[in-house]
Image 1 (cartoon, rainbow, N blue to C red):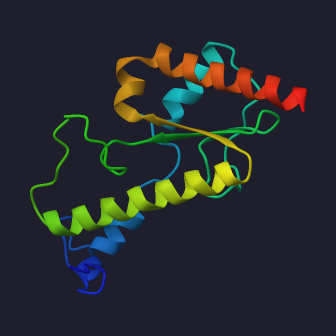
Image 2: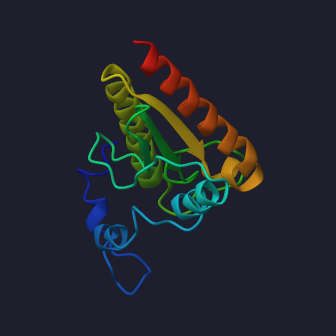
Length: 155
C-alpha cells in the first residue's frame, strides 16, 4: 500500500493536533545526542583527527575524512530499520512506519552505492553498537581511515 498517496502524512497525530508531516519536520536530522554528538565526542577524546561534519556529499555523511575519502554515517536503529532487538517497532500506524523505514533503508543502500562508485569508502555505525561498544566503533573507523590513506598514497 502506498501510504504517501493515502495522505498519511496529513493525518492528525496525538501531538497537539500536528499532522504527521508537521511532526516529522520537527525531528532533528543532525546533532542527535545518541549518535552524531556522541561519536564526535569520542573522536575528539581519542584524538582521531582529520574529519569534518556537514558534508555536501550524497546522503550528507555525518563525518568525512576527505583526504582518505572515508564517509561515516551514524544510523539510528529506529529510523534506519536495524533489527537489533531493541523492540523499536511502533504499535500504532504500523503500516505507515514500515513504509517510511523501508524507504529509508532503500535510500541508505542507494547512497552507499553512489559514494562507493565515486571512490569513497563508506562505514555505517549503528546507534546500538555505538552505545554498547564505542571502542570497537572507533577501531573500525581508525582502521578504515588509516587503510584508505595508505591506499591513496600508493596510487
